[in-house]
Length: 61
Length: 400
Image (cartoon, rainbow over all chains, first blue to last red; front, side):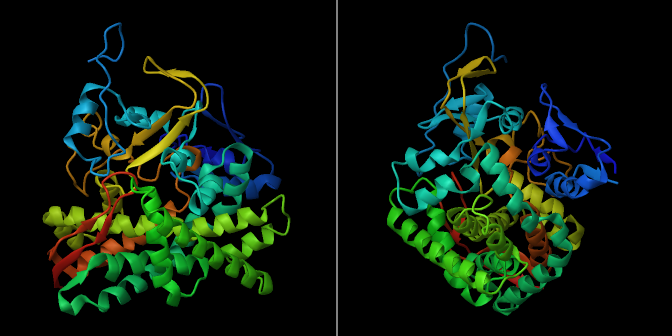
């Protein structure tokens, strides 16, 4: 599984961090940090985060 | 023009508490030109786009409107609900509740909901279109907003009038006449809690896969969703979507009546409906300010902000900031930076995908079927601050 974030669309709301804290977090500089290639077992969490993003900036493949 | 340095002018003062104060007044634009913020009876008002964008998601701030009842010297049933429901929670409990609520408002639902929105809008328009006039809130925006929520939550549409009245009464709490209207507000909240309890009981007896059914299932584990949280969430889901959408569609009509060439454009180009929703929300949002509160002392723009300070982020002012919108006039064909009508950050509006979807279909159909809309009587307005909108809007139009 691959997680990609469109950094131009991302407005740093942090809904992904709420929906899937296992995969997304804010870095010390306030930037978004995520696991780019998580295990398949986290697919439900990844899709919950993609769903919740107000800007629909997350793509799961 | 600089915000820094040893000399800075005194901050402007804006009396947001005054029921006659308008968030669209020249005083706001003048204040915004002079300074990035203003003093208010509650704390600070933030006026410019860049600052609102940053402060919506600033780590030293929490959602601030949980304090609205105490700012207004109010306690009681509505205040109790308000101070405990999702919007007023932070950290782990907020995240837990938000994760439970998110799936019911997923963008994946929109494809299936779109035809139902169009059918509902069409049915409502059919009922008045041949008269060439209507009271737009009562005849359209109110039953439409309520019908969408009924559909989403599996509630019988026959009860829409009752739910719309409850939502309108509760909505008075979100304006500056909160204290005056407290009996009406609390009576409505009590009725909605009773209805929520009825719905929860019904779903316990007949388990279902819909939102309330899922909440009831989660509630079997009280640590996952307590009994009170269950009721608070049902009340939020019903109230949260009715008032806002009802008001926003009324405000949309007001903007388009002021810009008839834009309405004609939308009628000819229904593919602009989605952009029209965004542009309406940029210039006339129903939610005119978003509240934050400082959780610690911090400095911003060379201003010291003590812990506990309430900041009202004026969405309206920010979204017409000349620094970002050199041509700020209403134009549904313009490319625009994002507005703040749904807030931002951790508390970004939960229902926004649904709201954007249902308002898109409504405006699309209205622009096709109601030509040349104009006022046919006096419009009754809520105060132009807090959550605003029209209470009654008599319009006339030429049926297509």
